[in-house]
Length: 124
Image (cartoon, rainbow, N blue to C red; front, side, top):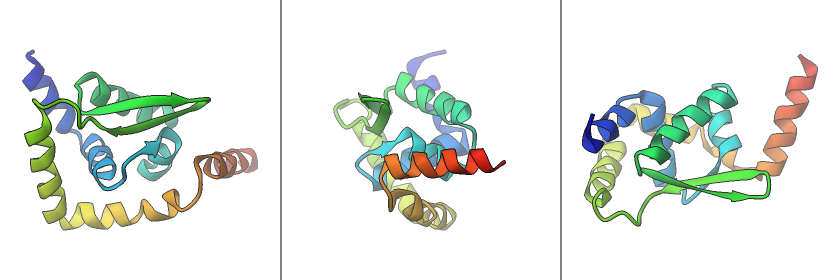
């Protein structure tokens, strides 16, 4: 498969498209915020994020125990694609509604969110 085919395959999954859309709206998100918003396991979110990183659509940086993600704005080859996706996200009402559900997740710090996630897990 070529790089172009891999990029479109990565974007063909709704959750990966949701991640990219969220990162287009927010400069950066922590892995824990993405995992919470998607409503999937941490391992599943990590797999989605890895595919997006591997295909050059997003970048990651580690800060202590936290991994933060942002769109890859440094690759001039994909910049037109990212701009096109951003316009399509703005037109997608379902995706816009979905992105509003990210607001409560981003209203607290990753540290506070992680504590809430651990507390919920301890209750089960």
